Length: 147
Image (cartoon, rainbow, N blue to C red):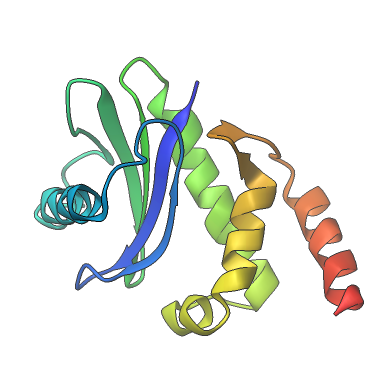
């Protein structure tokens, strides 16, 4: 199981968070084209009547969830189990919610380093590292006291 990339963008397609793993280390134009393709694919879907999973290419499947005005997207291998990653997206948003106190897009824009810190604690090298919300929040409270 490997995560190829994690994206967070708003309803207008502006990227707020991005982390690439594995083979998505490409030039900036190809990266931007891929993000535009993902945005067009996801934003055009009917979220009430279609699943949160869609195939992007012959080797990549997208798992995504929309929370208020933000889309959280993971690119995973085709053979990986989608529900595991959907639950990780939900956990990521729950931890951000608890960490920021009801997270919104502006929290991520002005305190992006905190969102990346959460992402780095949960996902390392494209692998899921931590699944305990309580343990994550305990670690972040210790880090907050260091500031």
